[in-house]
Length: 127
Picture 1 (cartoon, one colour):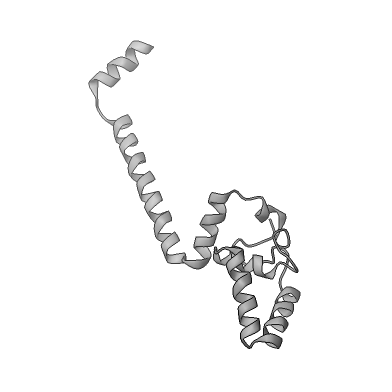
Picture 2 (tube, rainbow, N blue to C red):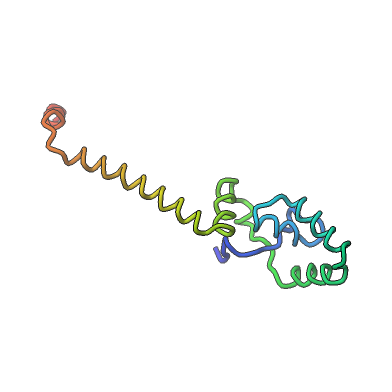
């Protein structure tokens, strides 16, 4: 695994020309059609030479999306898109998950190490 999940990549598998718009859509977690329509509108409104130049420069400077990233399931893809767009929210969600898991493990540990006579008797009966 020689790639980063939070880096911008061109997505040629879902792209029309060079995969820049589909890469932007994947990176930001928005619909690729919206990115394409906005790119065309910005080009027609007055950014003709600059948008086209920026598109080809971006295609030249960025790498193709690695195969391992293309094969991720939708939940994992959604998680990494949230990490890229809202890192503090995703960090808070991960902390809450670990806090919940830690609480459940503490309850299990308390149950296992408790001086419950009934549980000790049942264990002795199993021997």
